[in-house]
Length: 225
Image 1: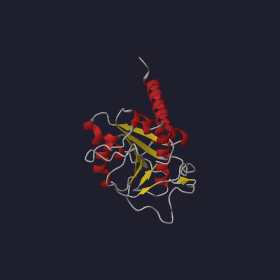
Image 2: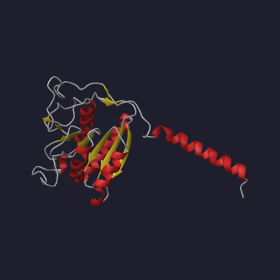
Image 3: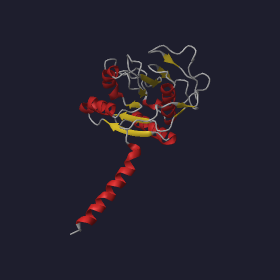
């Protein structure tokens, strides 16, 4: 049997180790307001006459590449579905987060009954940005987002039919799902969800959110992908 004093010392050391490892990842602590590092290139959006809410803007390919999130950007990747388009979107977000040193956490809805509770769980994490990937999430997001206007959302590879100012989307011909009530677009084509286009989607969308150009749809048809 371990002597009581030795056991107590061991437990104290273990607790200190756990606290040290986790202290930098505690999202309950406040942190500096996120900002854009760098500026968009010509042709991203016209800042003198920014797009109106719910408008569609077509940024010049690559005009977003000079924009990066500030250190400590907290992002929740909210996803549902194991189809190839969703998997490619998820991979693109994860690779972007790694490259940009983003503090990324992933929340997955495995079953239809989990969709709304999963969105709520993502909200409870108080991220700087919630990124949605997967068509199954569109209707739950349309239900929840108008009631949480202080939370920024980014939808990649789909869009909400009537987004509020806190919901930005990145879409293109071949994607553009807008919810079950509207059905699948006649131009939907999973082959358009290429790794290059999905990577462009997350970078362009984040550039818009960090720049305060929200509540719109960025259309990436001009991106070769």
